[in-house]
Amino acid sequence: MHRLVLITVLFFTIMTNSKTIADLNASSEKIDRARNAIAKAESAIYEIPDSSNQFDYILELLTESMTDWDLALKAFDSVQKCQVSIDNTTNEDLKTDYQKLMIVSKQLSDVHANSVIIATSYICLVAKNNIEHLDTIRASLEEISQVKQLVRDNAEYTKKSIAQKYL
Image (spheres, rainbow, N blue to C red):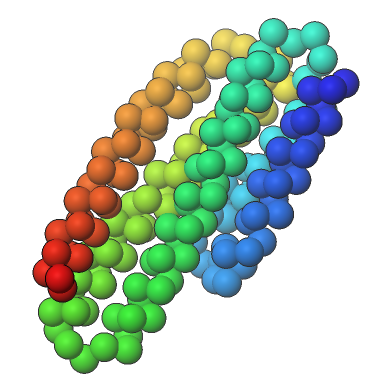
């Protein structure tokens, strides 16, 4: 029972954070899909028996998903800010730099939203006792973890190279 309370608190935190940035403009399909996946997983979690040997892993997934969700929302907010800056500048070099920043921010938002979607899929499969696909989802989670790192590295490199131009 203690685990369910902890998981409920984590879901509440995830959903509360989602209202702050993503509601500015819900045009991102990935953000919307991730938000819907979180809602489905939230209801599915109550179908998992307390005795499940998956609870510890699910708790780990929820913790990581909360971080991914926050990063997806922040990156999505950056996409929107870049678009406003692109629309408001007449300097072509500056416009090009904002476009580059917008691209890496969108990549960050997408990859972290996808990670949330995959993690919540795992939770839903456990809730349905559909264990034959869990290994596939775990492999996908490991893969997307590597992709997230590549995307973060690329975003940091892009941000630094643009910032150096203006120092």
